[in-house]
Length: 210
Image 1 (spheres, rainbow, N blue to C red):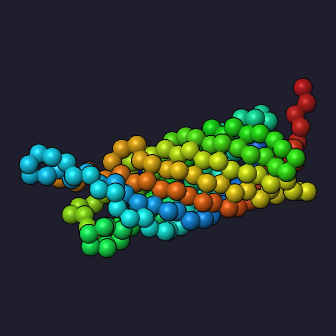
Image 2: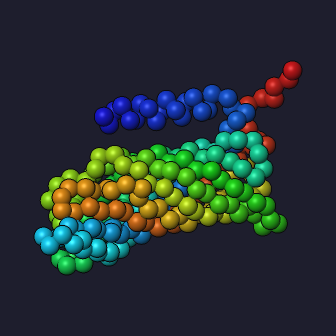
Image 3: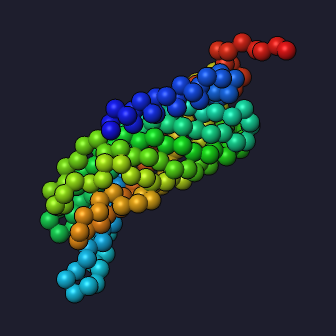
């Protein structure tokens, strides 16, 4: 399943970049992930105990491509390594989850004298790469879905290399862990910094003449 997922992601990336005039930018980022989990535990009396556990400070890294030749709207697809988890409030156990993610965002951009503010939103597909979960009796889901909203700033630079900074909020769509009597969902904030190569006006593709 792991090989199939990687082949699927790589194939989609190649298809998306087939028309180089459509490609507007390539970038790389890294930063910190401030994550925790919310747990639902079914009790013997039929009630449900809801617990919000403590945050863990971990890390993330991304490479991304930007598409759509429009000054205000872009589509971004990115491949991400993201470390999530939580610190269990009763024992102090650190439940760690490492994911490989395929994220797709619609990006709405503005323009100011100092740079380009933007807003991002869209779904994520998350594949569980590794886990260390001493407080849970079974493995978390291998594949699940989340979504993300974020804000960013692209700085003005006198080259096509643009510094960028972003802040994301990333909650799960479905349960990351679902084994009776416990269900969990991840909640994470991501702070990212990096660079983008702007290809919108300095692309490597020659002009096409009709």
